[in-house]
Image 1 (spheres, rainbow, N blue to C red):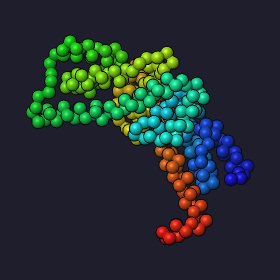
Image 2 (cartoon, helix red, strand yellow):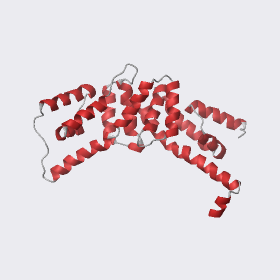
Image 3 (cartoon, rainbow, N blue to C red):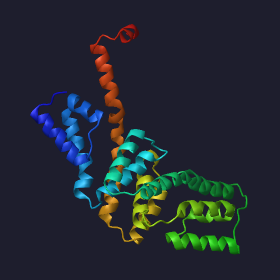
Image 4 (tube, one colour):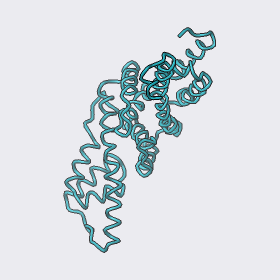
Length: 261
């Protein structure tokens, strides 16, 4: 479409704020430029005011779009490219996807807590007392890595220590020089727990506590929380192109459309 000078200014401002231009933004420019301008200010605010690097922001978007709670392929492709352009290594992106894979534990960890409560309510025994030597070693390995031992860890360790061992291997992962550091991993985990597509309040609390112990700045945590809300705009990313197609069909007198009417 041919842009007016005002539309061109808005397009350039959006690209500066968000770092991309897509078919859905072109569609909003045509259909509702005021909303596009509003979203540019809203979506661009965290990057403009927060301390996180562009690379870190892109890695967070990779995690959110790649999460099994969202699986937004076009966004994942876009932000993977932008992450690489902003200096991310392939290993860092693999580490992000590993953390997103571990998000599958959220339901297990909530569920085992409910199971323990319901077993107690039913008067059924659950393992208690002293840990075995193997269990104690696993407990110490978890604490050495993460600095805490949430309730779900104790529950899994007592009910199924073999599963806790493989769970720990998954969470720790391999450490590589060009992979994510501990602080970056924690920020990614905050995003995965905070995002509305997979909201996990108890896991979010664990990750925020870890972030504070690691000395992560409050402003960095706030920026991650703000960024998780941006997935809501994928309603526009999917919906606006569909709306434009429908408008064009009607304008062209699509016979199939007329038949349905």
